Length: 240
Image (cartoon, rainbow, N blue to C red; front, side, top):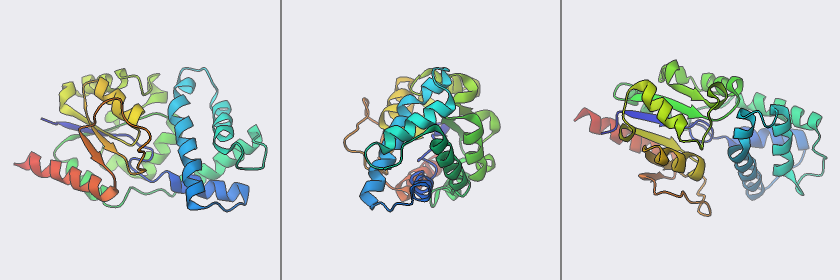
């Protein structure tokens, strides 16, 4: 029986492509087709998810990592040379756009209902200050106790290490099979949470058919409406 539902942050609770696209358009003065923006964002997220543990492990500085991320994302697609200064300017524009993010449609009332029936948590990779600013903008404190928010930068643990999940469960006092993780990344979220013994809900709203989890998720959801419906169904089941 599920007692806790834990969420990834980026591109799971909000649409991360929107602030990325706004910053990119502003800093390049170029116009991209929807397909080009989707490809660029996929590269941006791929690098972020695969490599942020190197910042946590102090193998890369945050600024060096951010510059490398943009070079990886924009290679052969943007004429500007990606210098550290340009990367900093992009990050400033990106952080400004992130200050306007909202929860996916329908998610706020679902989280409100969940918070009365389940332990709610967050497990996210990323710089602590930036991730906490996003969570505050999304008003996550209305639904999640501060002790239940795990940010890799504050723990010296990062996904895909399953121990970040087992540590969360131990702190809250639940067994692994009583926790369910909601995330958008097939490998970083689904595989690592399943290796910790958790149930997994794959929020595959980007329809990433070419990247599949190494394990079978317990649920696959492809739209924000489907995610809200699933969460409300869990609320109704808990009330029986």
